[in-house]
Length: 243
Image 1 (tube, one colour):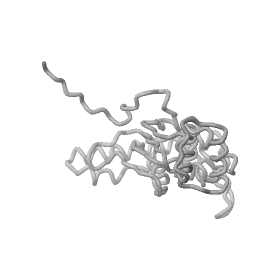
Image 2 (cartoon, one colour; image 1 turned 90 degrees about the vertical axis):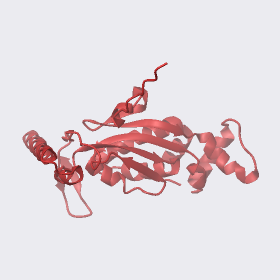
Image 3 (cartoon, rainbow, N blue to C red; image 1 turned 90 degrees about the horizontal axis):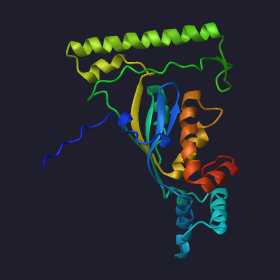
Image 4 (spheres, rainbow, N blue to C red; image 1 turned 180 degrees about the vertical axis):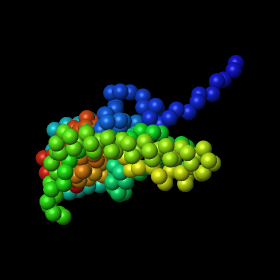
């Protein structure tokens, strides 16, 4: 019997279920690739102090989770795991990767493979109003919006053309990639525990966060709410502050 080896898929092609994918921005997504996360795990993470464990969620367990959240007993919220596949522009990724405690990342490397000509062309073009520390952002008029989008797309394609010309000349990928812009899409794995996810959402799913990373945080919070509804409700009730 002949065994046929399966060929590796591109990471964005490995997303299996559309039920576990939230599209973000113009070409990106957040996909839940795996999870071991539940409200019961939080409750039992606290009850182990008395050498006890609940077999199923009860009203007492829900009350315990609200108490833990309110009084900032954080470690029981670390007994869980989310693994996501993310496709996002480089400038969003760089903001995201500033979150280190309780987070792990592995990203598509432009050193080892050729990058793809996919660029974020924003529909939400805005102007910055105010002084440092007190900025607000307001939408621009339609003519300015289309002019900005055209400039971004044109410069992105020109940069990628230069990248390809260098590759054809035999320049190493790690050198040729230096011309690529920050709005280029990349793909990566992101893993975190529920406590670190809540902290990320509290900072990035906020009116003060940049629009693009806020879209990523909103998508991530949907999975927290779906898999850990009691924890998420307590998080919201506690002013969206992680314990």
